[in-house]
Amino acid sequence: MSAAEGRPRCRWGGGEAVLRARAEAAGYRRLLRARAAEVEALRGAVGALHRQLEGLRDRRSGELAKYQVR
Image (tube, rainbow, N blue to C red; front, side, top):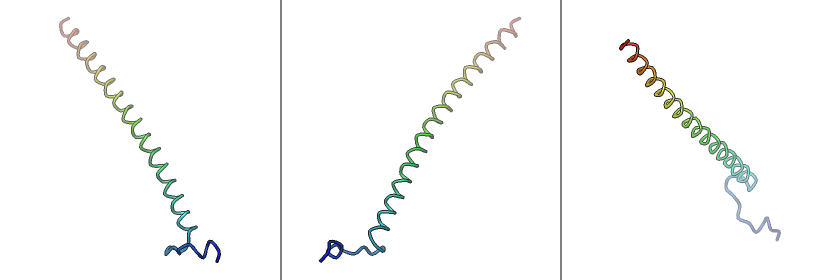
């Protein structure tokens, strides 16, 4: 009896299909991790832009108040 005959049969059409599906799932997990890292980086960029905008608004309102006094 060969090693293949001693293994239980997979109902999805053989071990190769399962291995391909696992490899595909691993690829999707890698893509998902990469996209999650991109999202986090973009969140950081958005936060920095919001802080920059608030700084510009504060500076503008200070300058506006200064001109109104003049």
